[in-house]
Image 1 (tube, one colour):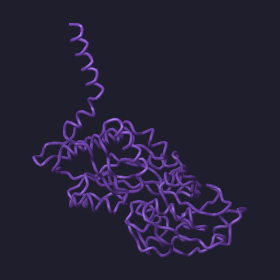
Image 2: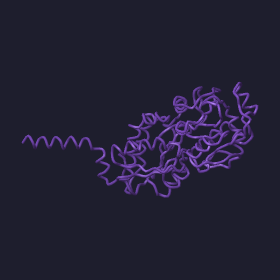
Image 3: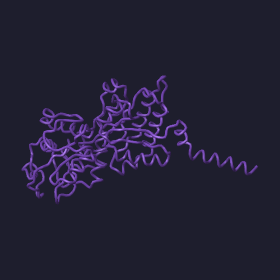
Image 4: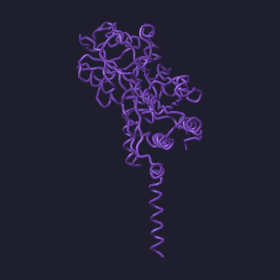
Length: 352
């Protein structure tokens, strides 16, 4: 009798330990797939590794740029897409998609200048725009020197590096430039891919970081985690309040504090050029895209369980990489939207 009771207790104990993974595996889902933005890839990769260790569920993510992610989710070749450029409500409706914010972070201008340390160079918004317009061509240009008195700037040509692929990081960067420079807005504008007035293109945040690391005199823009991982020299930027600020978690958080997710339609929120003396001017969110009508509800449920786990257990991992986790009240809004918007072919909610 005692042996039988002990066996029952052991079975119950093991069932509790493996309950969450078993629920997912019971639906026959061993892997989920996504594609898109390179901006959040470092944290998605870290979350995926931790989740696999816990549950045995693989999250396969192709870091191909926001444009590619949008194309793949529309084509139905992945379970979710990822984009740093939020889709407008009309575009979501036309494609039968919903979007929700997963993480926030900063796009960071980085340079390769010998003897210059991170944060030593300061640039105003107008000067940043004119560099990317090709109007300012040398590092010892008087305008740069005037903003950086006493800093030994080389008489070297500026090599502008930008993205070559359709990119949400580019959308955030050009959205910022369009807000701070009338000339940029009129001549180039804001998009995931633009006709660059100057420079060379790299594929993904990885490609831009690689070019800047290898080319003396270069300037590029990457997501903050790539700047950290590649030990690149970042620039301090002058924000809307007139303060020169460094890219770091507290300045991203200051910009993100102004986000009004509650009153946004389709979670369409843009965080560039936010007010506040501590706000980083090129802050953005990264979004997940899913079909409202799911042909494979079990897979969709597994995807949502993964992102629910990331929201609730991945904050520390995100912060270690310099990202800003979504606030609890936003997570509640998002998961309520899952219930009302993501359904199976019979109209039944996929979540929870």
